[in-house]
Amino acid sequence: MRGSAVLAAVVVVSALIQALTVLGDPVPMSSLGFAGLVLASGAAVVLALWITASTALDVVDGNASGALGRAWRRPGVLVWCVVLTGVAAALAILFPLLPAVVILVALLILPAAVDGHRHPFRAASATVGQSPGRCAVAVAVTIVAYILGWVAALVLGFFVTGLVAAFLTWVWFGATAAVLLTYWSRLYRRAAPV
Image (tube, rainbow, N blue to C red; front, side, top):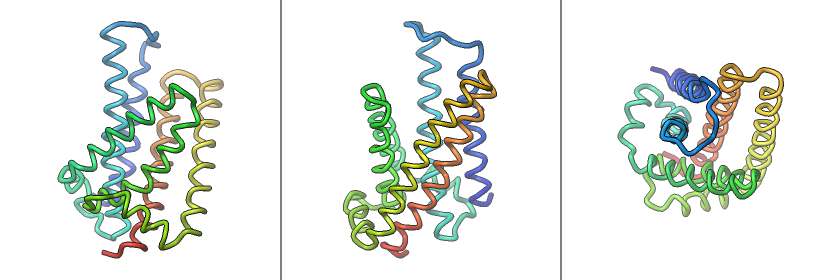
C-alpha cells in the first residue's frame, strides 16, 4: 500500500472509531461503559499517531511501500506516542491551549524517534539548528492549524452534531496531523539525511 493510501486509511479508520465512541450520545459519568469509551478513544489516537508518524517519514524518504509493516517494527515510537498523548490530555484539562506545546514537541521529536534515534531531543535540536527559519515557519503553520482545528470542531459541533460531526472533526484532525507530520519529517530529513 502506498504511503499516502496508508495515511488516508489511518485518518478514516481513526475517525470512524472516534465517531463510534459518541454513538448513543454517552454522558460523562463514573461507569465502566464510559471508561471503556474513553480508553477506546485514547487508544485510537495513540495508534493513529504511531502509524501516521512512522508512515510520514517513510513518505519523505520515498520508501512508502510497506510503510504499515514498518510501523509495527517501531515499538519505541509507540512509547513516545503514549507518553506525548498522555501529557497532552493532562495539560488539556488544565488549559485547552497547552496541548499545542506538546504537539510542537511531538512534531519535532517523532521523526527522529521513527528514524531510530536513541535521543530524539538531540536530533530535534539539530533540526532546529540546521534550519531555524524553516522551523519557525513550521511552528507558525502548526499553531494556525491547531487553531483552525478547534474552530472546525466548534463549528461542526454547533451546526452538524452527532456521529457526522465527530467523524468530520476527526477526519480534519487526522488529515492535519498527517500533513504536519510529513512536513516536519521533511524538515528533519533535511537536517539528518538518510
